[in-house]
Image (cartoon, rainbow, N blue to C red; front, top):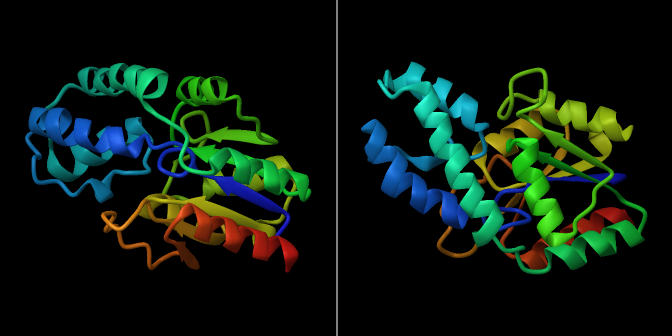
Length: 214
């Protein structure tokens, strides 16, 4: 392993713990999809979420209002509510000390990412936002292929850490070794599409460090 690409939401920060309740309680009733399985949209860029829902379910919600809801909610979530997940900062430091190249690959826009990086003083060798990427975002592989190109590493030598079905699929299709990160016993998302499922921060750390040693 020469590099690790980390997703942001649900991997480095606990933002999914906030997004999911907001989406269930506010967004889904607004668009008439109260029973939607959030795994259908988690990990996607919010602009592409609208396109997917409008095409799949023919929602009549105005695009501008839909995107505005995400942008307003993101201000509170990233600016005030999220926290770093357990051991995230120390894991990044330990990997960097071992000479591993680190990239952040997120479906969030750069302004949301920058709030997190600034709040928690995080640095990466490359930051890739699917929102600014010139092609389709997750689950398509292009954003991860672009990240590998940015850091100059063959995708086969990269580990991607993802928590969502769309993220796992995206990194896998790019040819990376994919670790599906589980948030705890209550997290029931099926991550069987990943090469390895880490059930805790300790499990994630041990797996990544073992890949470094290999």
